[in-house]
Image: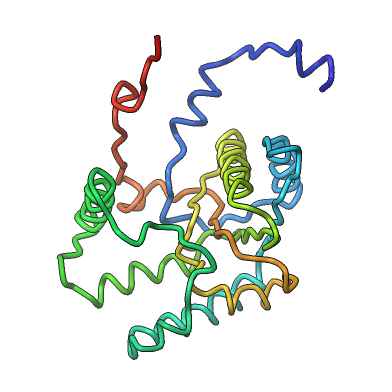
Amino acid sequence: MTTSQVSTRIQDPASVDAAIESRFSARAFEPRQVERDVLEDLLRVAARAPSGTNTQPWNVYVLQGASRDALISKVCEAHNAIAANPAMSKDFADAYDYYPTQWISPYIDRRRECGFGLYGVLGIGKGDREKMHAQHQRNFMFFDAPVGLMFTIDRVMGRGSLLDFGMFLQSIMVAARARGLHTCPQAAWNNFSKIILPHIGAAENEMLVCGMSLGYADESALVNTYQTTRVDAKSFTHWVD
């Protein structure tokens, strides 16, 4: 730790709070490109995220241009094939359990509220499989963001390293807000790791953690008006005397 880290004073705490509170999962982006030096600086800052015994277990693959477009084509093709033949889904499995195998309240209630709320804004009715499929496939187009990020971890690492990874991802998203950018972290990509990992040139020991869309949010897009709720801090805070 440097002297400057210890002595640094945050001159504008409201801006730090604003970066955190204005972060949301943007689902529509402008085509405007993000310069490489901006991405490099953003990742440099995010590298200060904490990790157990400073293991820094993250790998980041940046996709733009042709590499991004080619991955979109491959995964959308597979996604459409599964829709036409659901039995194919068994060939595309997550490398780890992101969600629980059995849902209980209040988590299932929050999940439903999120899904119904988003589809409600978009006018997608319950059971409208065609529109639901099309909206889900927007994930695999990076929601038109010019930058796609893929995150991997060495399979030898334990579950605690996924906690470290979460802090790294949040650091990226907050640093992005400080630069006028928005993001969407996406576990949806995980089902297609068998396509993604070879495409990005990942080693055999790497496991896909998630993907992320990054760019300038489309402020005119209806989908970006949807805002998820948060429970009051009092509901999850326990003061121990």
